[in-house]
Amino acid sequence: MNFWDERYRNSEYIYGTHPNVFFREELLKIPPGILFLPAEGEGRNALFALENNWNVEAIDSSMEAHKKTLKRCQKYASKLNYQVHNLEEFDYPHEKYDAISLIYVHFDSDLRTKIHSHIVSSLKPGGTLILEAFSKEQIEFSSGGPKSINKLYSLNEILEDFESLQVVYADVLKTNLKEGKHHHGEASVVRFVGKKSE
Image (cartoon, rainbow, N blue to C red):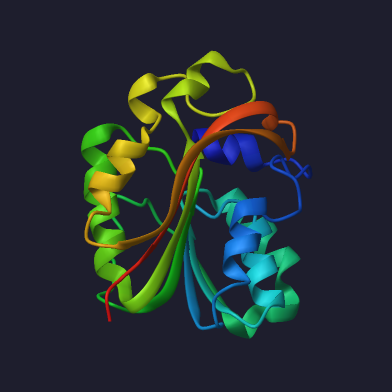
């Protein structure tokens, strides 16, 4: 059993049942269409999007997370396509999605740039990217996230990875997380919203 299957296998929703706050705020600004959620986990963001008339495609490496998401979202089964895949091996479609959201999706630097390039390619012209991740300053906090500085992000790294997108919003800030027991307490995060040119 992989790390994420082990983490997700019990009945508890380890990052809570509510959507990420930044994701929620930004998604409500966009007309519904097709949303892509890489590393979606237990479905908290997928369910919110489905409830707000989005069609959702999601992937995650954990079968346990997949099972929990399908159970939570069974009312919206016809609008949800959730597959079990590793993000580095997924066949990213070209210009398919109206929005893509990366919520605490962390990689080492080489893989990060590769995945982020796929993300840009998968956005439709006019599509929106919503990202929240732990900043490099998160290494000083115990509220969640990778313990390797190489898997934490600087704002400059994010701006470079998504330089082809029009910046709608970009910042590093401290926030108080209340997302289950694994994201809880004071944290330093990078937030980014970008839009692909028409």
